[in-house]
Length: 459
Ligand SMILES: Cc1cc2nc3c(=O)[nH]c(=O)nc-3n(C[C@H](O)[C@H](O)[C@H](O)COP(=O)(O)OP(=O)(O)OC[C@H]3O[C@@H](n4cnc5c(N)ncnc54)[C@H](O)[C@@H]3O)c2cc1C
Image (tube, rainbow, N blue to C red; front, side):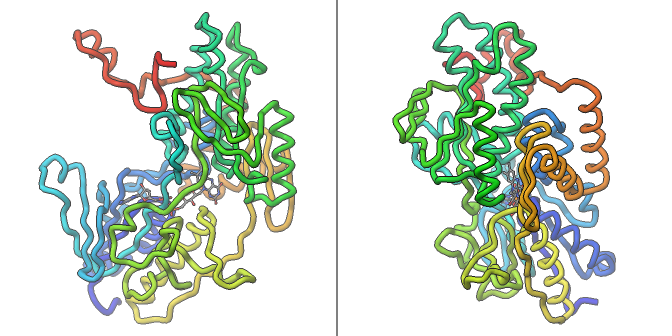
């Protein structure tokens, strides 16, 4: 029984948002039935994305629908509102929400009152003012970007295979990835592996014709797996003919030429930007305290500092790492923390409603696993270092155990099993991104513009 009626607003339907709402709907089952509590989840997409599977989705090892979890199905006791929070006035306990309907009606955002706020909008790509990046760069944070990139890579191979112009062919077969964290390294590792496999079906494109370049500003890659495993990853990628450039920055990609700080210039149609993340900009439209890097300042109990009834976790929150030796360290923005923080956050909301003492979030980083393509990987978990096939197997086993819902686990496992029996899919469904193009042409109109990052027919 809760002290007072509680309207809980969860902003974001990612790791933190979904897992917090899931746990709240379980723990507040009776209160929800009696109308003493109500949970609303506001999020732009009707699904949660399991981001660690995006590189495998890009490589075609998992179909896009299986790396996402339908929120309406799993959060069946919550109200799921597809839209975005554009501002929060916590002093007045209201959030401004825009939805497709408010846009259609032209009425501006609607005000949503709440008693408890969970702010979990995650992060966005951290970009730099690099000339040409906004026009030509491709991000790698969403399932749409992962599938778009897969289609784009296969399309470049098609262009290279059919052009007579060596300059166009060279640019089409040059792929530049900027940022050596797990998103960049895994995306590059999986896509290079897929393209190498796909090349056997092209009469005039050989794996050696392709240039895969990884650009990293610091002196190491994959800091998540430790120094030794990071060095191994560099050696392994170079063995595959991938050009890994450490202590190097992308200075420009204007006019479709990637110019690096070491003076190298690569004409290319593919620049993938995975150089880190920054907290979601919506946090600036709240009256809640943020640190110098824009994350919400939080207590170890996951409430926002200096407030009552405002909670945050995940990439958007600066949560003190109470297990760290040096004081003042924050938990890193990763799924490992997001998932565990969501559990403590939901429990602390329930404790608050029931007037019980709060729990402290405490988790020592367990290490990381990364896939570098089919049967290739690297891992450093609980002090154990693995490489090659065992690391790749551990990566799959770990993520299979972590992907939400039994339904998703079964589907992903079935896909991996089928992929082991049959050949890989190498088809590009790029036309899915322009579903009306053919009809527009038939009806005598002009096909609509190509989306950025995937231009057709331009070099
Ligand atoms: C390619 C890739 C691979 C990764 N691999 C790993 C890995 O192997 N291991 C690991 O630990 N971590 C990994 N991560 C990081 C991990 O996915 C994130 O740390 C985690 O998703 C953070 O959870 P979150 O809930 O804070 O944010 P998210 O999961 O990003 O969720 C944020 C949600 O908020 C929604 N939202 C945004 N703005 C608004 C708004 N204004 N109003 C309402 N909703 C909003 C978003 O649409 C999204 O649904 C990876 C990330 C990427 C991109």
